[in-house]
Image 1: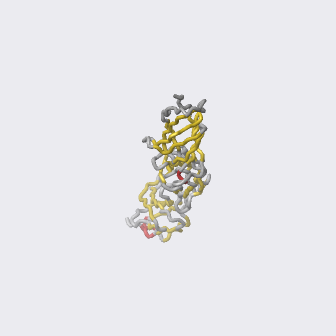
Image 2 (image 1 turned 90 degrees about the vertical axis):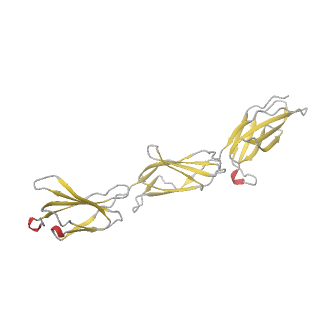
Image 3 (image 1 turned 135 degrees about the horizontal axis):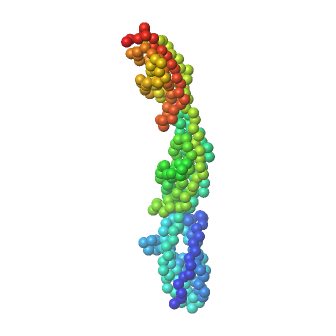
Length: 290
């Protein structure tokens, strides 16, 4: 009997695949070390459960086949000048991965947050590589820590990002979960916008009948804090704090005489705040309800 096969070399080439699934098949080139004295090579490609996929025959130790991505077994045997056939070699396992994503569109190295949501919309899309059934997208922060993971059946993905520095990885997978080569993005910076401060604050009326009003330049809620300062003191004591959507606030009617101040600022849903606007006023003793 002739000796068993030598080393197996694999090369994966993107090419037009035959029916029935041309978009899901990859051209695989199989190559063995040439066996001296051999005139004919026969190869069987099997699935991992050892069911036969195809049989290849060639006078040279190089042959090609179109296969869907996944795990396979391959074995071979040879014939010599006297038509003597050798034994099948021991099956070797090999992987046909999905092709790599070549480029992803939709990312910019720098993005600006939307002034109303304070988030930057990120919309990614790419050409589906051969053999990919779905995709795993992993998002990382500036420190390389994973902060989000998502799987998509479509070659696209969208999300909104807060200000910061990010990167992501996209991995194509077959229906059986076989991973292709991961696409790694460069870093992208999401720049913040300053939160508009409370502007044009005026006080109408006096003492307990006073009403604070301001121009509403944003849909963000306004935080209002009322503080009191005792005579000859430098320390302010908080009396009240609330968050309101309106553009006005009434001074409580039961304040005792003394010095007061109101602090106003806007806040977004992430806790980021604008600069603080401060307005001081005095409650006169003769006008006090106490």
